[in-house]
Image (cartoon, rainbow, N blue to C red; front, side, top):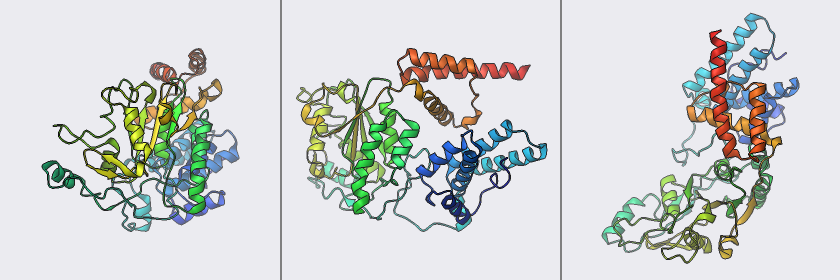
Length: 438
């Protein structure tokens, strides 16, 4: 029986960290701990479930909002699935309601329990994490100077750009990317995208040297995720960017007939603009954003009459530390920028460009990944409607088997399964209303 010892209100940071250490985890509010606690809490084994409860309670007490949501949900689910005295069930529901009130009022538990945190140089725009926070860099650094000058600064365009880029011009731009704890990225990908194990291995290898040398960089070689349509390449690329704590921008390249969407439009044109990476650096006030070129293989080829995304990308990856932006009329350092791309095939991509990428094959998911995908779709749906995922009705055996059969017949297409999931969810809501009315 899970008792009051493991179902309780938020505790102090000291107790939360001590509990994590007692579970054999690092005393940190990071993604690795959250994913471990999440999986254990959903286990059918009592010891694993208690372990998960304690982990979620600890992370919730450290201020992790996603852990709070999960903890409230597993408490309510435990009450629904367990025979217990009415008084105890009422008490547990009250504890869950207390956690939900904390979530609703977005209380900063760390500040509430320990006072205001010291000021930092971080941007107010926090990383687009959807769950937890990665471990901080081993060595804190103010950042790097990305832009040393603006060309022709006395011209009207030069003065305008100097004003617009004043926040990063000749100044150290903070690093936003996070150095994850060893194994954290691999475990997170294995949990959300178990069919993409090669991506996890490649990313983990890219951080091995950084950890070993205590480098302040978060360098990663450009990656291109290659696989059939419907294998989740784009969402995986975004997920990786989020895991690494980077500000990311997705550029759909399919059907793009020129490179102006990625490269700069030179001065002299009425609608001139800087390159997409320069805009990302300025908008995020970080030296290391992530640019995701989606469906690179469907863009126009290098040498096309009006330029091409491939050609623009080639220029950026040639000597990234000295990329010449034709709108800035100056070099801008893109060596900290992480470039990722997706493609269904690589034979249409120029060989000299492909050589600059690490090719990451993304396999088609199999029926053994069905439960993981459905859980991910439930989370995504809950996020889109800003509700708790436990508010969504569970599928009955008939609905589940129908989805599995459809998944198999669609050859493991995530896109097709997402559409079928939405239809089935509507059916489950209808079934739920009929039951309630009777």
